[in-house]
Length: 238
Ligand code: ADP
Ligand code: MG
Image (tube, rainbow, N blue to C red; front, side):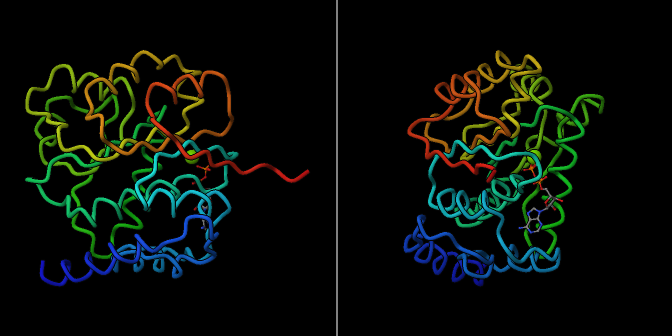
């Protein structure tokens, strides 16, 4: 923990000094923890994509983000890096810290993909406990694991199930909510589930909402789930 304390203090200053309007080019230009830097390097991620360059610095500084960029533009790392970093700097690590971040994805397949990327970039020394909560796996086993998780990747129906039925599932320490593929979440009819989930969460959290398209429904959802968002989008050049 000693080494972490020094690292955290340095990072706090560097993040405070970060200029969110400067579009950082390489991951090594950003104030990231040693484990995240090592995880990105081992995964051969070196240069930020456009959406990452626009969103990550703002998200590191704790801003709420409403981000739109087409499929394949790298939205997963645009939210996973801030999740790892903001929880790391807060030392929201280990069973006592409780759930720090909830990442909601429309489908099981997408949730699994996010979880795999999280494992990949988190594998070089991060000590978070992370879990995947999707339908089709054992509800009781999930219940027992819930109280230990710091980061949870889930689908809307399953997490709402746990929030309404699992007494030991405490979300009082939650710092970050991510809604990924928000347009698909809505197309699949999960609007009411997401509204209900948000009701359970602390109001002073940071929220990152990403979608491939900007629709009326997405802005309606944003109005309910994020206050004062920074709008970040990447348009295709013709
Ligand atoms: P989206 O969620 O926007 O559809 P993904 O996050 O799934 O996009 O990323 C699409 C692909 O781009 C993935 O194969 C991912 O590994 C790759 N990728 C993401 N960020 C980078 C990066 N900074 N450098 C190189 N490849 C990247
Ligand atoms: Mg995606």
